[in-house]
Image 1 (tube, rainbow, N blue to C red):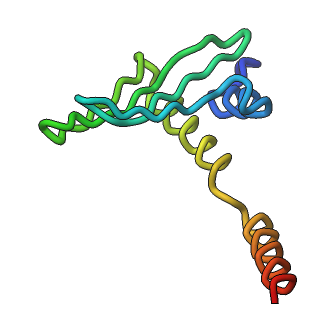
Image 2 (tube, rainbow, N blue to C red):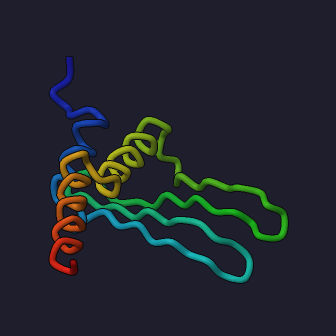
Image 3 (cartoon, rainbow, N blue to C red):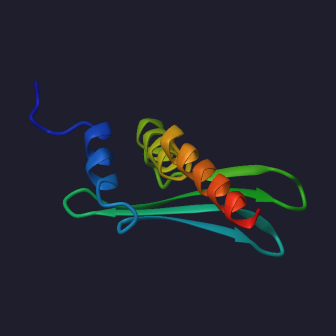
Length: 105
């Protein structure tokens, strides 16, 4: 068995410093729209994952820069975890809304 960290461990390490080394850049221009995900990790490397839609044809394109499906899938799942609120965050937001409504009434 290798001491080399697996893909999930490498990405977990990278996301421990999020958002400093991983960024999501939405784009929308005359020809296409989509997301560009950039990442960098010292000792691992750097790269971009582009998911775009051609506005004229409706065709979707994914450019992984030859990163494998395990790497891209894991990276996207970690990114989703950073933008989808947890139950605790949702409860906190509801408490803020409730508090504001009480003050206003």
